[in-house]
Length: 138
Image 1 (tube, rainbow, N blue to C red):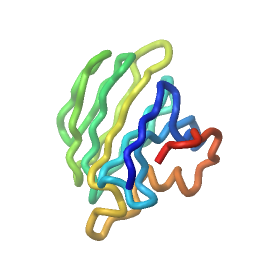
Image 2 (cartoon, rainbow, N blue to C red; image 1 turned 180 degrees about the vertical axis):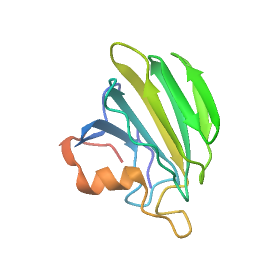
Image 3 (cartoon, rainbow, N blue to C red; image 1 turned 60 degrees about the horizontal axis):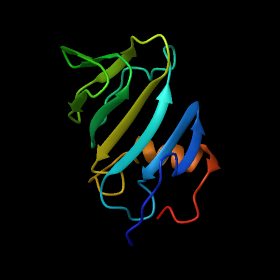
């Protein structure tokens, strides 16, 4: 693995329902985490789900969301952060009227998790439509 840098808007962008820009992916022997940036709107939320092998971290760049993790609920706005541990059912609802811009990190990645299920980042890397890729994205 070699160092690399990405400018704003760069990365491998996959369409998988919505556009996800992978800054660090799960496929190809990465560093053991994945980082994805995406913009979404109310009505595009994923269903409640559980990751058996990966922790998930969200950083809200723009917008208002309500996260649920197990029996707990968390209200987040721009600049907010949440850690969602593996093995606990979670999801979110978008409260904003317009776009919500998020960073999400998963660790370890499907490649590095013992008995991993492949990871959701690997899923759209392998099944989503690649729309854009910079020349040197790692």
